[in-house]
Length: 88
Image (cartoon, one colour):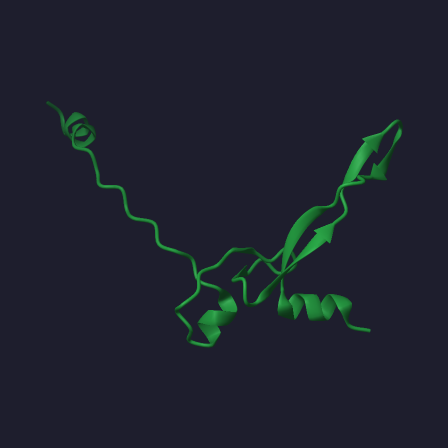
């Protein structure tokens, strides 16, 4: 049997998945929470304590144009990004 065939004949162990950690919790040295989503604004992982779930408008095709769907979608935003979005 060739070395290629023997390599494929032996199954490799599948690594265990670990919970992803919230960026803000990691900077605070907290390890008791896990991430619930990815911030739509900056792309960092966030937990329930450091995030907002806000409605998001969805554009749908309507004839030759587009219109806003009557049902909003949801998006996850970190508190820092939400503060920047709503600052005046």
